[in-house]
Length: 494
Image (tube, rainbow, N blue to C red):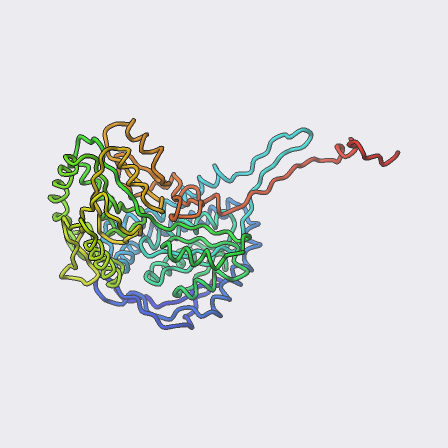
């Protein structure tokens, strides 16, 4: 494919960047995908100014009109779904089949967001004595959306769509690793007829992002990404409680297997949980915890048969792979380093060693490692295809191991008994807890977020509507008759 010429969008107009030159190459082919310059600080200033200028008119527009623009965006995505999927696959390295599912999710996000707004943030009115008690919802202002690379179309849209529906204007900065996909999204909104300045887009590295976060005109920051970057944003906003901050920061997610009658299906579910998107989803299972040594051996035997059969390849291969490359070669190198560090821990050993694929330096084969229960291992999110397998004595012990993390995004339970699942459900610390299903692949009809180092209690998904507006409480009356009923101590005479 021909490389996208990098541009930024502000006030409905496209401009070449004026900052540092940048070239994004496909991790699969090495070919340029996006070529241009990042936005300068001056261009960022202009983008924020355009969003601020457009806010008043957009906030006061009719909700039906905002819904119409969002539905037109969904229709455009539907009509160009193949084009978007192909771009995602080339730029991220994920298989084309998976890129298609992401493109479909971008479209479906609109209807889900409209439904969430109508059910969760709708004006309510009721009597309160002689008054009417009314709750309305107002937009915050200019919201900054910082997009991730792993789902570069769907996850930014999970912020942008509800933000626009609520009446906010947006400044969007895609990940520097997926600028072409971000630019495609901005163009799609323009094709949908969105008024100038309502959505603006800048390109850049963390410096542009930090500058935008600190800007006085930004009313809120919506971020999906790593814990480390989330902490940086939080520090930038220290002492600024007036600014909204919604963070989704990944996880060190456990998948517990207890008293299952189908180890084959459990193994398949573990594979889907750990290795989809080459392990580059925040909900991927990182730790597989099995109760009882006998069941541990049964499950590991199934995994040792299944994992070598996983097809690893390039995104546009004629026989589609399950896994493609990581986002870049450095990410693959970091994963191999993490594997070596874990192998240096006493008692840890590889059941299947993660290795670099011959066809691409950014591509890794899936790895499986056994970790003794007593081993002290880092509590971090290894963003790649490595699954750590541990044995527990019983369900209580397995749950205790599952909770040995400061993260709390996703957890899964595989087992036959609903009572066992409820035991786990009420004790594990996580915002997403699945039963007999992979940890990955959230529903657009449910909240998406976690506790601990996985976020700051502003779940996205269906609940994104909540942080995109604030409530306004009103006691209302058509006259001031109640003022004539004076309280003790008030006597104003005749």
